[in-house]
Length: 153
View: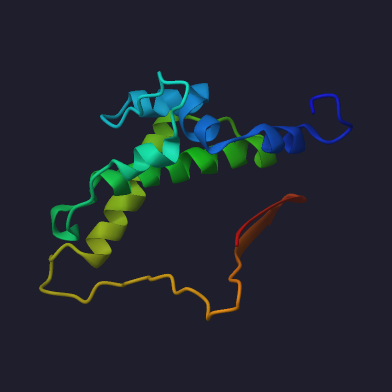
């Protein structure tokens, strides 16, 4: 793979796994080491998605739960990776931790914290497609001539 005549970012993409991106990558490990959510990756059979499934979730009234915090960190690790590859922006540990925390708290304050009396929370719910159909979710961006896309079927 490394000898193929394709751009380095495509080579990296083809090598990337969820386990590497979110747990064994040195940058991801540095993010997790600053939290109380350190994945136990010592086992050669470690599965990041299984580990996520062991994290607890609680009611929104008590603030963002452990699973929400872990997913916010994953999202910021992903953002940092994409910024490094597509925008030549170096990843910064403090930025990942700060932005993940701020996004989670902002969302919680806007939708669940009872500051000025009860409000109706914004509920975003995925709906499966009708039987016999396939659903495709996608997003993309462009900046300074560089593009990025992603999709889930």
